[in-house]
Structures are given as C-alpha cells and as structure tokens.
Image (cartoon, rainbow, N blue to C red; front, side, top):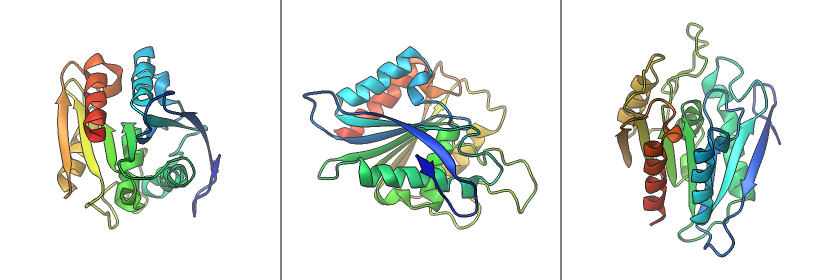
Length: 230
C-alpha cells in the first residue's frame, strides 16, 4: 500500500496477513511491527519468532505484519509527524480487515522502534480509540532518529500528548540485559510513568533489547496476549 500523511512524502508498506487457523474461533486482530525503521516482517527475526506469530494465529487472531519500504517509516527526524504513517495503516486495518464484535481484540505489538510506532499512535493520533491492547517491548525510544536541536526534535512527549487510554491496556516489556546504550530503557520508563490509564511493566530475565528474540521473552509476550484474550 501507499500511505499518505500531511507534510511528509508518501511511504510504501507491505502487509503479510495470516488468517486464524482453520477451526479456531476468531478472537480479533494482532498488528505486528519491528524495530529500527520497521522494514522487515516481524516473523523474520528468528524461526522461533515465527512460531510465536503462528501461536497467535492458532489462538484465533488474524496476524497482520507491517513492513515499511526503504528508508522505512521514519526516514527523517520528525518522529511525531512521521508516526502518522503507522496510525494511518492501523486505522485501515481496523476498518478493512478487523472483524469487530463482542470479545474481539485489536492488538498492536512492536519492539523498540516498533513500540515507538504504537506509542506515538496512542499519544498523538488517537489509536487508543480502537486498540484494546498495546504490547510495547524494548522501548519505546524517546524519539527515533531525533538528533537535531529543537524545534526540529519531536520526542514522544512533546506537543500535547494524550496519556489516558480508557479502552487500551498498555503493557511494557524490557529485557533485564538491555544495555540501554541509546537510552531506550530510560525513555520507556518515562512514557510508562506518564501513562495514566491501565498499564504494567515487566522486566524479563536473560533477555536483551529485542525481547521477542529469547525463549523467556516469547513466553512472556504469548502469556500476556492469552491473558488479554481470556
């Protein structure tokens, strides 16, 4: 698809869509986004990450993996403005793929820069109106690619962020072994502290920055998803 947002160039994105396993009761939709510029599919991390995505599908979720065409979703320092791209895709998935109804979850899960895509969407683009569960791991970093001085900087909590999400449970997952060399752990904790609605933060042992890459991280993410589904 081609994603259009005001004031920035159009961005291309590819969606990998896997319907729930045959015979499984449909429980909703899970949107999966990766770190960095978000240019790869979520399941491309490791074979075990792909198995975790398959488990979501077996649980009755339609898995929608979003991969941005180069140079990726950010492609510049204006993170708050550029995050309109993810919010636009999430809204399209909600309106075109998701099957609403009682008990149907709409989940957004991302790691590092992917967590930032979701967090900016919650804080500045109103996706909390339809996202029932946001799973943020290894972040969100404060401001992806945000190196220039103000006013060009657009960190997550700049502007007038929305920090209360009555319809959304926000869960943060950090690796106990995350080196935090770029400040992502500190930034994630700042956002966690700022959120005023239902939230939790869990530190996962034997895990570094990319939470979904370890057995402990995968088990934690999968258990949290199943708790949300009930």
